[in-house]
Amino acid sequence: MAKLKDRYAHALLELSLESNTLEEDLEEAILVRETLNDADLQRFLVHPDVSDRAKQELFQNAFAGKISDRLMGFLDLLARKNRESLIVPALTEYIDCVNRRLGRIEARVVSAKALTEKQIEAIRTVLSKKIDGQVEIKATVDPDVIGGFYILIDGRIFDRTVRSDLNRMREHLRRGGYA
Image (tube, rainbow, N blue to C red; front, top):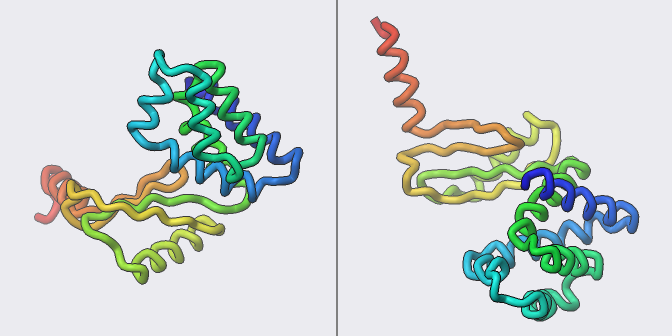
């Protein structure tokens, strides 16, 4: 399925490049992904008893006048081929590809409590220098994080949580450190 998701994402990317609408299509893809990334909508889209016509009506009602015919055609194609479960993953891959082309990378920062704008900006500055590009920060709160934060960026994890620090300390003590 991952290869199929990638194939759809790259086909959409080719359409955007051919029509020279990368920036506009990126904004529209983000809108569609965020709208359709809802559990109830996902259940509706993948339900076998929901007709293609009903799915197309959903797309029309939600996105008519807000997205291009290219992106609407993309949604209709996936619905006709019963690949609705690939819409959000394919759009996520597309968004990542476009952002990489434009020199932007999305980083997800997960922390124990909400970060201030100043903290987010400090993280953005450090990451931008580290990767030599623009970084878009998506900050979320996870109560399972004891303290600190971790960052997911470009397939890598930078873990500065209290839990990971305690685990490193435990491992170091087990090997005979701090003697």
